[in-house]
Amino acid sequence: MGNSLHADLLERWTALAGPAARSVGEDLVRRYSEPHRRYHTVEHLAAMLAVIDDLAADAEDLDAVRYAAFFHDAVYDVDGVDNEEASARLAETTLPALGVEAATVAETARLVRLTGGHHPEPDDRNGAVLCDADLAILAADESAYFAYAAAVRAEYAQVPDELFRKGRAAVLSALAEQPELFRTPTARARYEAAARANLAAEIAALTGDHSIVSEDDLS
Image 1 (cartoon, rainbow, N blue to C red):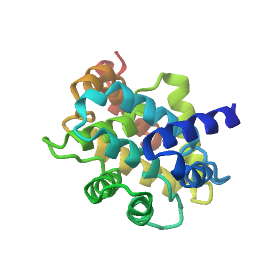
Image 2 (spheres, helix red, strand yellow; image 1 turned 45 degrees about the vertical axis):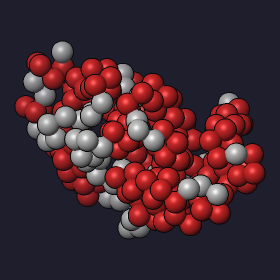
Image 3 (cartoon, rainbow, N blue to C red; image 1 turned 135 degrees about the horizontal axis):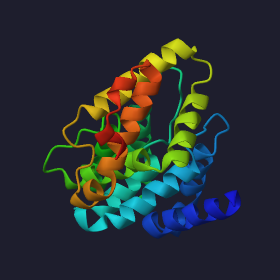
């Protein structure tokens, strides 16, 4: 399955960037296959691209959104590196050599940086599509969400449990405090309620405050 998924991603990359860019696509797929990754993997990239396909009509520059998906986790280091900034810089140095227009390169890099906080402006259609695709996992069913949370924990295996729980709870709480998790109408209708229930349940598990989860959250 892994080889098949790699081939599918390479096919998608060459359809986007052209056959001459195949070696860059191979490097990107290799990056998403690094052994320390448990969630930010080729499976995550493929899932994001599938959601972007579903939300394609909401984007203004679909090529930039797809380039940003390929690059958004190209650098993933859990030891204090600003992964979004490093990934954006990789896009800025890689894409011009492929003949990608400067405006598309700039938009791609902007979108990659946006995934650091998932706060697109109300009129940022490209940012809305990319961020919605990145956060769609939050609306997974119970078993898939548990697997996602466990995979994130595994990526930070070297972090003591107390510190991880505190940091993870802070990240999830910041998301939960947003008025809307999803910015496109399609994603909001499809994912918002389930994602909020999952967030509430995980925050409660991390903090031990099970009063966070209400009957409404679980419905």
